[in-house]
Length: 269
Image 1 (cartoon, rainbow, N blue to C red):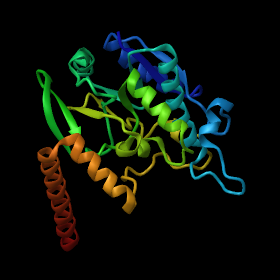
Image 2 (image 1 turned 30 degrees about the horizontal axis):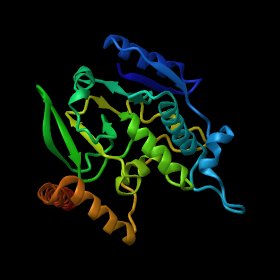
Image 3 (image 1 turned 60 degrees about the horizontal axis):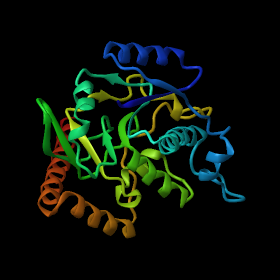
Image 4 (image 1 turned 90 degrees about the vertical axis):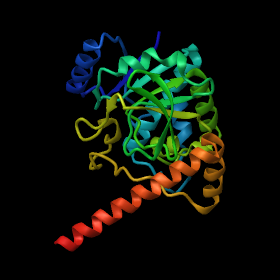
């Protein structure tokens, strides 16, 4: 049976009620994980975000708290040996086809580490297999941002924790999830997505720092020149040459259409 973990700040009782009602309607039981504060982390997690003397940490307290909450859950998965865990934030709309996804776990590829159930931006995806009626397994040309809902395997949690222990974490967690060529997480998705993120304009685990924005801009992180080759090599290997060409062409066409629409809108003003 899939373990379900809901991340929720202690003060956000209304969001807990919102998620509880949806999960009960689907007949799903869950565990609540009390979201961590970035300015009050236990030492076991604070070490991932160690500061350089004389420098401010590049992440806000809210971003650290968000990252640490997800990382703590992964550490729990490794410690308990839970084979599959559904991780949820508390700002979601859950659709009925979530049950189809949970029922199709045994049909996922043997190498899967993470299955994305929601995201900010499609990132370019290609359908590679059917998981049942009206449900497709997809691969991404670019993994979408957001951490609202995902399935993670025991193998995937162990892989990510091992990767995180070898570095100082200085980027938001969804940016690191996005950089699959670095963290080496075999990441898949489903279509249609069974979860919609940002039902309230963003999860408050990301805005615990006073004065922070309600949501971070859903823009893909910049990739420096040295990482572009690593991304290319990973994507060609993960997608295969044929799918990589298809997704690259599809993304280029989408960008062209978006730019054309923007130009037309500008000329009409």
